[in-house]
Image (cartoon, rainbow, N blue to C red; front, side, top):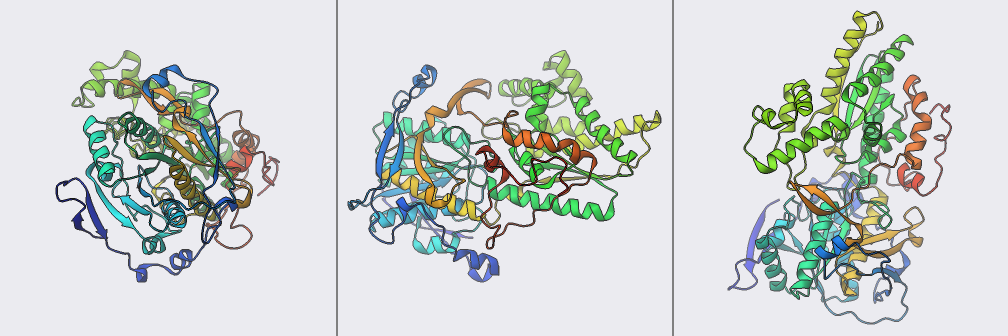
Length: 578
């Protein structure tokens, strides 16, 4: 897609630039893509209107507890009330609003429907409203590059995957000049609101920007939308982030296909690393869907303080037991963030991060001199390639780029060495033929499931209603998601209620706390009840591709069902053969 600069909104201000985006050629769309463009996502009754959509009534709830440390960092926005929308039968015409929207961070299926929902809400409230899409993520706001969203734009992208309507980026609005520039851009465009669809870091950034705007009396309201396929942006306020449902269905399809192929050949061990940097929600959901022989959950590793050697022995034990039963094949799942969960590696990464924060130019040979003796020993033990990967440039948030660390290959190497040692001692007589896979990018921009289509379309409406009702520093939320859309409950909750302090780039930083897998939660307990049976017997399950029509099209992922107390047939019984 090509962009052309058409004009500046004001000749005396070079920072704001309207970019005309070339429309996609529908002839390049597949038959299914074209069919998805015609899908109409249902809405909760509160937003359901062809014309004259009433502004929902607002019910506010003030927080009971105040975190003094967070309050000191957000003096203008801490303590904001949560907002719950209720039906309003009295129609009051809305004023024309100008709103901007951007995507921040990695792609997640359903993002285009957030834009569509926001646009159509604004237009239903007042046809004179305008929606601007900032290009390339936060950098679009910083540099003032945007495009005009129209109904044609919506019809080109609704219900399709990716963020290519306006693109995305991993920049952060964090430097003084970034805040100043963003303020100028929003004032130049006379924005009533700015919507930021992103993960925990991006929504924290939205809260910081909302605080800055309030302190400088900028009228632009800032609203966040929960986005991440990792599933770690959820708490008592947010039930699930958008994109998770679609991604786990794609990954489960791929794993199910591998397992089905495995049953035909019966000669390989597939080590599959799944996206999910800080939490193992994706890996756990895929295990519940596909029933692998081994599934390593990072949070369990951290809780048990397991070493790399202990993890290796666990995998080897399963392989040896299966070999005794004549099964030299299997599926092993692990999260991409596993390496950060291993306590000894986590400590090593912490030391490396501190060293790099103070001396970014140090290389992997020199860094050994700065490490503690224990961490130096582990660093020397790791394969050379892994040592280099641990030293890769950090992402904009100061995090290790774990998607580039091939943990599955590391585990294959350590397991291979362990099995060879056991074979020499006469404890292993099987054949070990490992294959490695990484499933991540395949699930980020897929055609969104019906759930994500509907959820995101509603989130867009919620974001619009929050802005119109004068709210800022809130995350758009939908409650009761496991119920029918008719029973969904739109709301908004202050980001500051979700924030805690975390060590980033060598200093304490306010961020939304990531939701890790709860070891006492029903999803993990359900997995635990089935793990032993799956390790020895072939209970592989192939859920197949995402369905858009028919009886299974509206199925939710197992995680959200179990978290809401919904039992999954055939999963609670560990002896059931799927």
